[in-house]
Image (tube, rainbow, N blue to C red):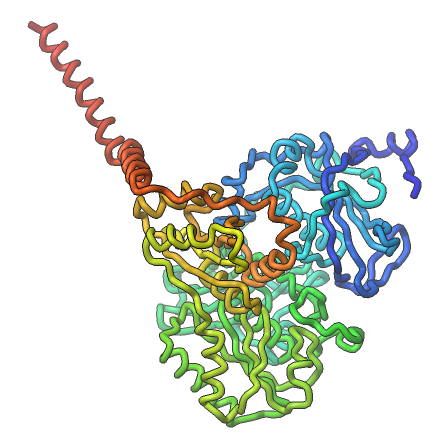
Length: 627
């Protein structure tokens, strides 16, 4: 395909852009992609997705794109991923869509991504961690610009090609169109009636779509699709005189407003996940109005806005048949069921009862059995088993639900890590339901309790004869300071894996020197020593999986590794040799000395002592001088 280069007259008209010829870097392949709107425009032509259409991303570089403001290392990037991913800013440019041909002369699509050349050479090219992270960001940008959904966990980096198709000249602005952050100078409450309604839906429509309600008399809600802001105005009673009279409780999808610490005056469940930690609250005592503003977080599995939930290939276990008849979910209850599956099965578990009519007996008895089962097994509320009921009014293509239900009028499904398992027993049998739940909840996870257990385990599997893969979860002590995933991500990934040659182990890493020394010496490449991390081990080698990913992505990664281990084993690290007793004791003592050297209390004491000596010296000098 020929490349059109802009003429000098065209360049004169647009002095604020660069025309850049990309420099090849590396290329990743996706075996499938999904068009959010059913089609995309490629070089002026409308293209509809056909089965098994491949997608390629050429990661390229140039000097014109600025480097990141922060000089990220792997450790810095990992730490930010564990705390606040929004702080990570890596300038990128996304090209238009272009067609290309695979090695088998099959039609495919590709996009060129541009990053800074220095950043690419210093950080990206030699780091698998950085290359995979760039792909994750690129997938989000491609989704935003071209409405194409790609699953980063399904990407495969090509070994023998640095790009696919012809690298096209890109037109890139020299400066952003507008600043990313604008100062908010006015805290005045804007009434919902004054909002621009062209880009959003108001509360009545929202409630009708989601809850089937008419409205709440004292609440008005507005969702702006352009800036993805959720705004709620709550009209308060006259006895609310100051901010301290109000208490607002929020989580990612729920808002509760409480007056005088006892009376609930408004409660709202959100279809959109909210960044509740950055929510803005403004109280106006004159108009008795409370304004709540929050940024919406998009869920990739489901569209954020629009009247219906769209069918998407990104869901686990979609039917591969005629997708046209499953284009949308129109029933409100079906929409809420899918929303519940996404939210409750990700880090927890969900039991979904589906009936073609109201099944009163099962709807009443099954939750009782689940509560009794949870109590018997000591399942905590923080890791609860959730129950949801759905009267089925339409076909649901997500999670292979249609195949599991078949012609049955009633069906029970167990969801974990966004993966479904059907119940095959009798719905009126407590024993059958108990056994079904027990199968998943009591999957064998070996506990390593001491440093001797860890050392022995690493020595036992450090050979080429053992064909098993091992998932070793290292639960470091400071997990409260870490991100949303962790023990649940590990357990849900382990419980949802159907592979027989996978064995799961867990160790709570206390701050004893022996354990830390063994990890440092035998697992030298473990970078996440402050937050929970997961090691995948096979034939004496290991690969770290930071638990910033959801259970579904962890599971997908492990399934891919088991199938393609010999293609990627060169990126794995060999387990270190066992330490002798003398070596262990020497390194433990050295560890203790280092801790004492950098102990804050000793440093403070030394500083205070130093100042004391200086003051004493000055005092003696002044005394002698007076004499």
